[in-house]
Amino acid sequence: MPIIAQLVDLYRAEGIEISTGLPPHRFGGFGGAPFTWFLKDGKSLTNGLGIAMQEVYLLEHLFAAIQPRRALVIGNAFGWSTLAIAALLTGGRVVAIDSGADRNSLEGLDLTNRIATHGKLPAKAVRGVSPQDVASIVDAELGGPVDFAFIDGLHTSEQVVLDYKAVRAKAAPDAVYLFHDVQEYGLGPAIADVERLAGQMATMLWATQSGMAILFDAARHPELARAVAAFAPPESALKVVRQAAWDHRHRHIARWRRSYRKRLNRLRGLAGGPPPV
Ligand SMILES: C[S@@+](CC[C@H](N)C(=O)[O-])C[C@H]1O[C@@H](n2cnc3c(N)ncnc32)[C@H](O)[C@@H]1O
Image (cartoon, rainbow, N blue to C red; front, side, top):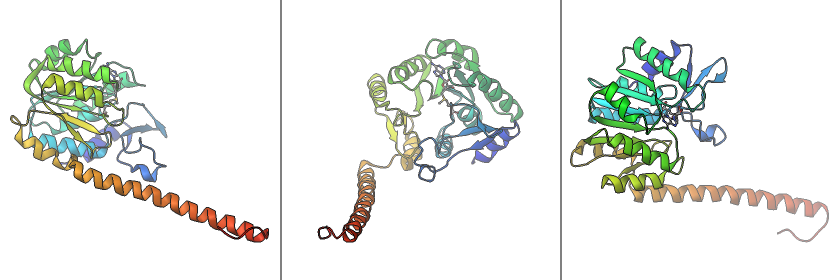
């Protein structure tokens, strides 16, 4: 079932307006436009933006295919992804940790817990720093192995590997790991390390705004490959779209050159200068 309307209602009940899914090309090419903004009195409340609308759609696909019993989120901010996961769980629970690094993210923990209570969602957000607090928080709050992890804390390759190792030490062998912002923050080296540690390949979800990656054992979760297929177009398709984008950019330049030449020729004509170019 779609959950965006439910999430927007829950934040509005807290006096917070949501903007999510805006197309960058209508907002000056701004890459931040599609992500989820939390607004009050005409101001953005945090720099810890939530996952984009299409990324929530991805979660809807994932949890239609698998139903984790214990989910962990590293990087809660204002709770958008934590609450989205909670809204999609039919029997499990999610715990989220946040160190408080981003603006107002500690207030975001209280907000998340208030919304979870009000919306009767199985989520809890706690203060904690990854990697050092992961094990104790999993033990205290989930009481068993993690079977789904969403890693969206500090966006450096070194940290993402530390996050993965900390979760993996407390995870079930068939756990599914979803990484946010892989393309957006150039976290490819982290994913390569994670693949080496896991002994399996991740899938790059190109059709997500942040460029997410997902790691799962296809033999244990055959249904997941189908669920993510539309978010992971084949390389042959990406090649065609990349070429079209390149052509489009160059058509733009060609048009600009034509108009520049026309103006130059007009000026030359007026000044009685050399023949037009
Ligand atoms: C991009 S925001 C998370 C957005 C959130 N997942 C969502 O979709 O709504 C990243 C968050 O990670 C937190 N953070 C950064 N480093 C962390 C760490 N080492 N451990 C836990 N949280 C961390 C920041 O305080 C920030 O709130």
